[in-house]
Length: 193
Image 1 (tube, helix red, strand yellow):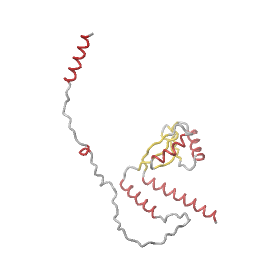
Image 2: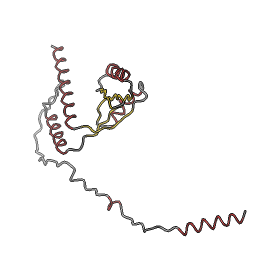
Image 3: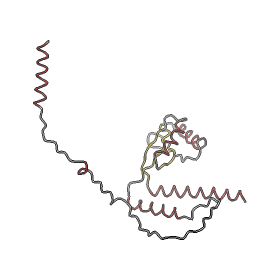
Image 4: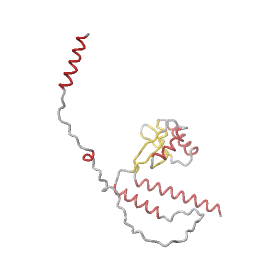
């Protein structure tokens, strides 16, 4: 037994000293490896001079007035700029509720999502050989996760996915949502008269 231990120890020692690295490892600092100058990719800020203004009377209104379109025009210009840069799309989070071969089950899930869970954009697609039911468009994971937990209570197999969405498609969806919002506000105004 002692002889066996001596031979095993000898083999281990010989193997550790016999193996030498094939080339020397060169160490570089992380600063040398990573180019952290991202200024070329950042949008340029407009220099607006701070003008001193005289104090004015602040009028607080109880109306829920919508902005005059200033924000929308800014969003449109940013989307046009992103569209021109061709980034391959903007990452959005969606909830994949169902993926399977049963079309009637997929249609039932779409119906239930629209009527039980409220105002989600639900989409039924066929990607051979499966039907897929996706819900919502979220630009941040935190918001998507909150909705995901409420859907997951009923549909246990639902999970979050991240997709790239075309900028033009996003601008169409924003315009459609704004039109629906204006139509809803218009109907509320008619009801109040």
